[in-house]
Image (cartoon, rainbow, N blue to C red):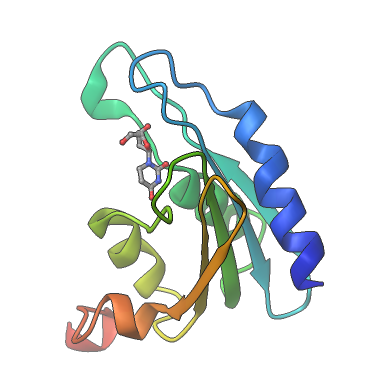
Amino acid sequence: MEDKLITTAIEMLDRAYVPYSHFPVGAALECADGSVYTGCNVENASYGLCICAERTAAVKAVSEGHRDFKRIVIAGNSEDYCTPCGACRQFLYEFAPGMEIICLNAKREAMKTTLSALLPHGFGPEHL
Ligand code: THU
C-alpha cells in the first residue's frame, strides 16, 4: 500500500499547475478506511491564492466525508525532500495531529516523519 501511495503522489506531479514557481508538488493522502485522495499544487496569477498539493488533497478528502487521515506522501522534484509548508502542517493538524508524513525528493528517496514531529505543540480544536 505504501508503494502504491508513493507512486500515486509521484504521478500527481504531472497534474501540478505551476506556471509561476515551476515547482511541482504531488500528494497522496490515505485515510483510516484505506481511501486515497490526491492533490497537486494549483497556482494563480494572483500569487497569494496558490494552494499547496497537501491542502488540495485534504480538502478533497474532507469534502467527501473523510477526516481520519492516516498518512500523506508528498512528492517534489528537487534535491531536498519536499516537506510540508507551515500552513499545510497546521491544516492537517486539525484532523490528524499524529499522522505519518512521507516526503520524497527527486531521486524518489523517502524521509518518513510524523506531523507531531514537524509541528510540536500545534494549535488544535481542543484549544478553543
Ligand atoms: N508547495 C506545495 O504544494 N507543497 C509544499 O509542501 C511546499 C510548497 C507549492 C506552493 C507553490 O505552488 C510551490 O510549491 C512553490 O512554493
